[in-house]
Image (tube, rainbow, N blue to C red; front, side, top):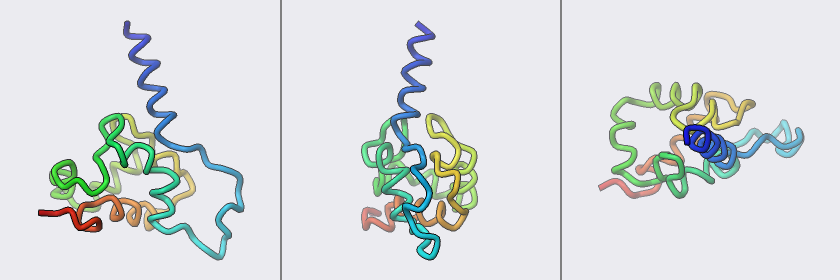
Amino acid sequence: MRIIGFALCCALVVGCAEAPESEGEVPAAEPATGEMVYTRFCFSCHAAGIAGAPETGVFDEWADRMEKGMSALLQSTKTGMGGMPPKGLCAQCSDAQLIEAIEHMLPEQQGAAP
């Protein structure tokens, strides 16, 4: 039974983030925005709350995390958390791009805060 649970967990992690595609998809002169990073690497889990991921724009799911501050959110993103792999598999993302992606998911950016 543990093997099945482990296999399911691995499948969720792999299914929740895309592997980086070939280089050159985003030209070097045009760095990826937070929204682009979110769409490519974060959306598949955070849009629906898959594998415990807080849903984009849902205040109740982000409130405790937001209280810890952006530094803690960035650190969790960089090291991975729960079913999320480090950097959500966006190995090439800079801290600034990760912060922009996090900000894109926060309720304040979606107008969902009470």
